[in-house]
Length: 189
Image (cartoon, rainbow, N blue to C red; front, side, top):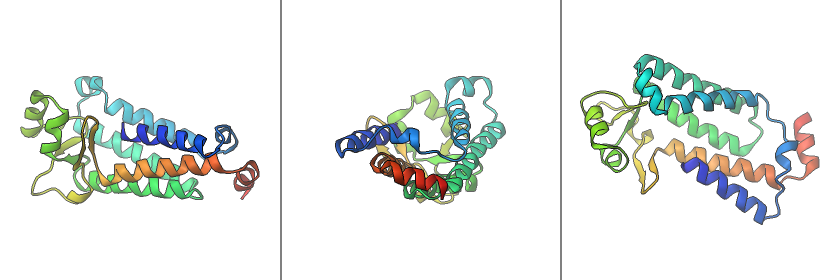
């Protein structure tokens, strides 16, 4: 949700600054399919049917880690965009927190109380993971990179999520505000 808000704001700001929506058709990302596969994997993991029918910690963890790896490969292939570097730092930040904590993103219980049902919180408190989240404990590694920021009415976020949203905003601005010649030159170089 946070990322969606960032994207919508970036497009609106880009249009207000005279940016061109058509620039997206001119800019050719290398390996765009990597993003689509990664998003498909993440949408699957964070879907209630996944928890109901798959709900295997190992499969969920590996699937999520694969989605992160695909995104990092995409970013490395398109490193010329400053915004993608920022976005990549966010993905790497989340990846560090998740990998260091056994494939799960530790999350603050106080924040979860705002967004999850009592039943789901009870299940998480009993040690079960929900989607790819677990509770922050004394044993949690890199707590400062975990989901610790609650945005009222929206969700719980990490430093990485904030960097991802900022990076997406910057990338959209970079593309919308570039002129056609720079985009074509950038493709060749």
